[in-house]
Amino acid sequence: MNFLPASQIAIDEPASFRLLEPRSLEEAARLLAGESAVALAGGCDVLERIKTQWIRPREVVNLKTIPGLSGVSGREIGALATLAAVARESRLPAALRQAAVRVATPQIRNLGTQGGNLLQDSRCPYYRGPWHCYRAGGATCDALRGFTYEHALWGGERCYTVSPSDTAPALAALGAEVEVFGGGRLRRMPIERLFAPPSYDITSMHTLERGEILTRILLPEAPPGAGSAFRKAAARQSWDFALASAAVYVEMEGDRCRLARVVLGAVAPVPWRAVEAEQALLGARLRDRIEQAARAAVSGAQPLPHNAYKIGLVKRLVREALEEIAAG
Image (cartoon, rainbow, N blue to C red):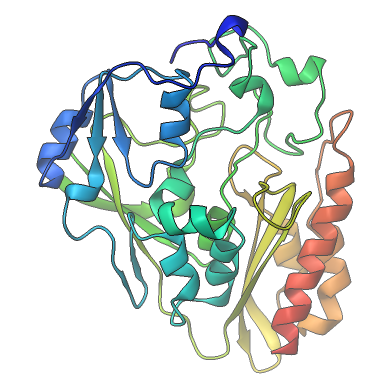
């Protein structure tokens, strides 16, 4: 990745590249194995980076020419399915549909893909701006010496960016798996393993290697009585990335919670599992433990100079999601 000097901030013309249109996963994987190639799905993130010459690929591999990657069928979602299609698919769990419909604007949801929303790059203004920060190859996290309003409460380590995906917390709470093609074969893994903390790779938000392609997202069957909900706080109701988000999934046995997953977004470099909040719900009636779970959701938070406000946001969002589920 190339550093964007201050003199190039106003660039809005991409450097020359070849647009390649593979007809199979095998062909696409081979093309993407090169150091100078990037994948194109909806293009909402990668085309922005190409246009500003934040990245300068020599080859852009258009995945839209590969058949079979854009469907939404029951609990299987093609990586190239648009966010608009995910939002309107009534058979999908509530948390995922609620998350998809909160992504940006209707125009972007009509173009942006489910896979792209999961794999988009950091939105940290220091990383995207004219600073040579740690993630961009520099020697320090510039946010720590600047304004930390948007940054992490947990898991920052050398870089304090946050996972920008709205749908990632919902899919993690729902226990989703992802299917990845690479090395001539398909493999599955829990969605949590798709995301990379700074200690894994400071230069990437995900764990995919060159030549690997995200193909599908798979959701497990939910038992009767299971419920889910998603909530997001943003500076504006449309367009903005989350300041904080929360996805909750519960399974009940009678009137008692027998399984709970609470996953937070925009507060850590990866979707953040609020284990203490989950433990507060187990074995109890939901309505009896909403406040306890909301407080437990911020256990261990380490706010930076300007982002302590996110603690209150997280508690409110977890509370609202649980109240929706409890109301049935």
